[in-house]
Image (cartoon, rainbow, N blue to C red; front, side, top):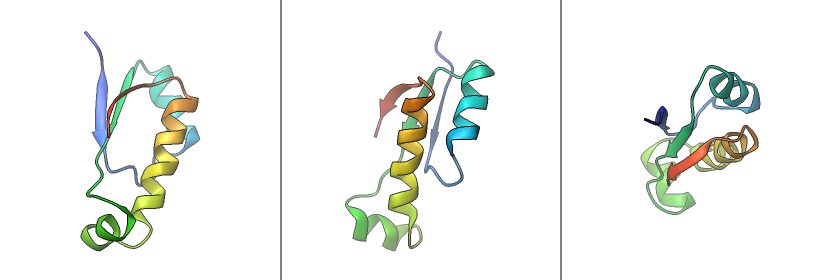
Length: 68
């Protein structure tokens, strides 16, 4: 069994990703609503960039990708 989460990525930084991995989280999924303009329009300005930063943090922490 794999423990994972799916998120929009806001506030999921390197520290949180590392803590999550140390706590046993193994996989990370990210929700995107399209390209940057469409995603930011649906969510909030800066959300697309935050999501990509979260994806990088998850990868650096060694979390498996569930998909984007």
